[in-house]
Image 1: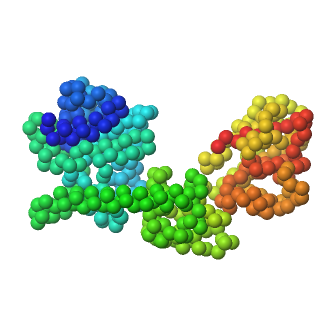
Image 2: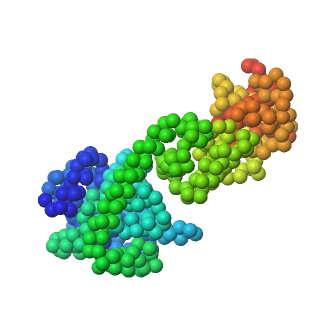
Length: 453
């Protein structure tokens, strides 16, 4: 068996029942990948269900021609073919290469609802280029580890079996098998960083040090080994520091050195596939651990926030300001009978369902409230003027701000509580309490509010 076919066979045989998605552009790397896999499939060496996926980015005037070439190649090999059209739009501070790669991966992962193996033709020279790109960005061990042979991403597994095969070996295989392939004209455009490294830097390095690709790959392997050790340490630290799914103990975190803290936070964020913070952001988070107890500092890390509140460090989304949001509720009054009304809340907070006289047990997600009069205006808001109120569980009135503090609701979550008003009178903080004046008796007609979030 040819070394390329053997590498593919060994990687795929670890997952014999998982559907296989071939990332196929029509270039020489993916053409060799496709034909070697087709040989294994037709020889019944691999039992996996195979789908060939060509992602059309639409970035070249030749994109349609490449798609036609890819479809015809699959027809000749009697392999199922799927073309996915993606729309890649340039964004500020985002490289077109990275955006196209992300769109491509999303398309590949969309083919199966269950887990699939997504196989790419990345090889040893690609690995060296990836290492140098990471070095240019100032990456740590994780970035310098470059590409792993096998990576879990969401429900799927990405496999790159050819990382120990050189570009020269792939081209030789293609020629000896008399394969045709397409050439992407953008591969010669040195405005793209990878192309600049491939066209300008690697030839110079290889001329001076012929084995440079192998030695770079060896360094990348050493970095991967170091990163695996750091992950093991982070797992141990996380077991000690984690209070809940997205919450860490400040007292335990403060016992760590700054380097160990940084390692834990990076690992913690990686569990949710979030973008990694910069060194400066991590230093700021570490400093804010020791801020005065009356402070509630928040530091933006990539697209999320790390917020400290009462001895805990919370990982949250970058919430939208919804203080001006307001909706009128028309579903019920004591004189009419109408169907339930559903209100979609902003910024991913779910939906509230208002229904009349529904028999349910009160809970945080389901509350019963006295009906308004026909004259009263019923509104839902996220803002308040700090009224004095008497929740159903208290014996004395207190200002709303003090009550929310009593309930130990973090500051940012207080801004995301839907408040129900009859005219300008606060009736309930949805999900937390009903004011006593609007808490119905068992036999009284009422509104039932259900929060699905």
